[in-house]
Image (cartoon, rainbow, N blue to C red):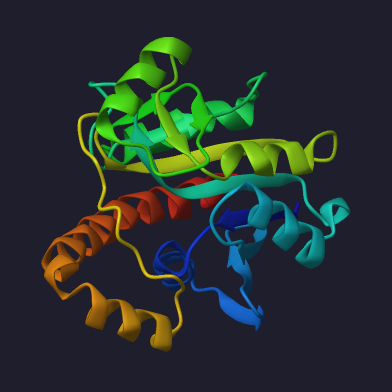
Length: 225
């Protein structure tokens, strides 16, 4: 039986390797479709943060068409044992047999995974903030979109958070970032923040390695459904 799965991803840097790994094709601005195993896939690049995520999904997605949504991409660790390139799964309130397959697929691929809460953050968190929030809430990781996807989908489809760790609990990401993803915005940033470029290039390399792990998992997981 064919079912339709919605993948939500925030940024171009997360979406591009996902689209390549799953062999998806563009079907409109920030929308990519294809098939993986028995699943029809629609991936939507939403933009960062809760407000952009909800607006993008409201304008681009008919929730009645989907049986499952996955909020995917990078996350920041909130616990010392959750390390770079580890997978973090947040299945929400109730687990199902489909959710159990998350851990089983990761184990088959030899990937380290953790099952627990992904906390919503409305900004990139610094190291001390991450330690404090991890201790306070018992969450494993944080991102800026999974909670919004779950709120948007409430009562219409289950939402699984499937993320890969970029920054560990003691790390702080660079605060400088381009104002957008267009060539003009990137060129302007390069001129104004030349001293930051080596660190950002290193971060981009780490991001690519992390997304490669997540996309390897996603392809196998979707094929197992």
